[in-house]
Image (tube, rainbow, N blue to C red; front, side, top):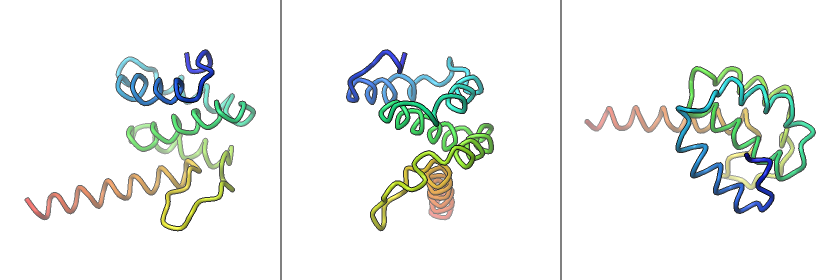
Length: 114
């Protein structure tokens, strides 16, 4: 379905409000297979969305995190993307690692306050 949406805003909406909100019905292993096979040579806009999907799976689904990191490291999509100081890189391995780290820190802080 992502391939059918050509407008970036529509594709972004679809990923953020449909795919991310309903992962229970999505075969994440199969989705990772598609990302792994097609992301490296995908057109820029689709590559960006596939990278977002890869990162989201790695961040939100610990059981798929190792594979998502490995795919990102091997494909190196957006590895050299210019990232301003203080911002998180869109390179999936860095993005996943940073968001997981932040989530863990947030959980520790919440537990210490409760």
